[in-house]
Length: 265
Image (cartoon, rainbow, N blue to C red; front, side):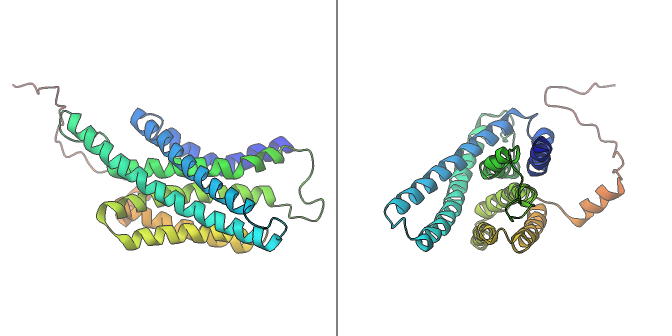
């Protein structure tokens, strides 16, 4: 039973992310590098947030439970803000790297677009965030013991898995929106990304009242997903074309690479 819960919850939490990595990232070495580097940036932000929380706890009265809970909320807020700061720092780094790649390329264009960088970096933030938030829960799900035997919610593992999946997707959407807002200097978009991240983190403190936390988080996820879709250049026409499985007819124009010369009659 423990193994079934472990693999089931792991599949729910990381199944979509694994599919995205295999289908859109794994085949491109440059995207893999951006994925790994993004995870490193998130880890550094977590390290700094943990250090701030650790110092604040040891400088306060550890016998005061209300104060310690307030410091936990404070630590979560600091962690969110540091994540967004490091997302901005990663944007600046990728922007410089994009300029360098364009300089050394033969056609003067970067082999990867800024929107693709935004997507991969957001996915990397989401995956590493999900791993750190749910790995201990998955380890406990193997057993021994049964959730709910002492009156606790029996849905702890399944709700944690769905929450992790939402967080992974949210980071991916936030990455796309954040990079586009930085590129176009839309500061109100940056504010909405940070605010939605803070709200999502704050809603987790309502657990184990899962209806009050999971439902709003998934509403935020759907809204951010739609926003990221249109930000990345999507449209309703694209959705209808995808659902109808129709493809545009070949215009008859033949494309030749820069290394090939078309034969002349």
